Length: 292
Image (cartoon, rainbow, N blue to C red):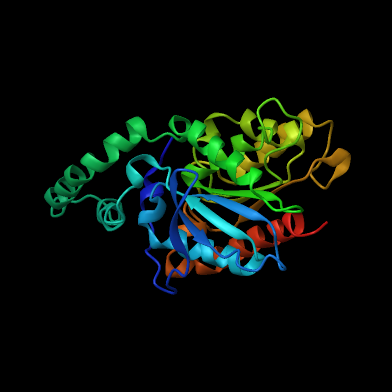
């Protein structure tokens, strides 16, 4: 499930990517950090929004995570068609940024027509479930190559939150007892709103620490949905409130006034939420990936 805000936002210019593109386990991936194993032996798989590697913001954020945690951060190129072109973003702003009037009707209609060749195929074929087997195989291969003492985290944004959540239910090897994911973080998740049981399963299956950055005004997973999800978790986990009781750890942090996409595509006026969510994520990964 995608909403208009999935395809809106700002293209960031506050930094330049410092990572590199490599072929990993048969998949093109952006690789950030990981050059100092004395600092961290762990890896974070970053599952991006619908724009994937075509949007520089994802690379910049991966670099930030690598810098703040010392972990290697990998963005596999798994989104349908390599991701939506960033040129869609200003068109969506033009289409939705102002009210429809007689004077702008024709220009908005034309803009809508130019968006259809990108939007329709993605809405039909772009669901992450279609590439989930590829993502699972990639994650297991990455896990298998971790050095002794290394852990595996996953971060998912918008599109990427669905597979990030589902990976928490998987064993490290098929049929095994060891968990695949040691810590999960997602921001402004899409799709899982239609499958709320996914979050319960993600926390319950292997007691994977699970965190989410929630936009108060999200069209999808907003503050109200987060509250309902927490209630479902407490019911399913015998009253555990996510603070470690019975081994269950989860956190839903609400960002007041934030809208969908703020973790990755924040506009200038929303950058305080962008930085706060990045700190939430890196604190989470430092706690569960870099400490004994």
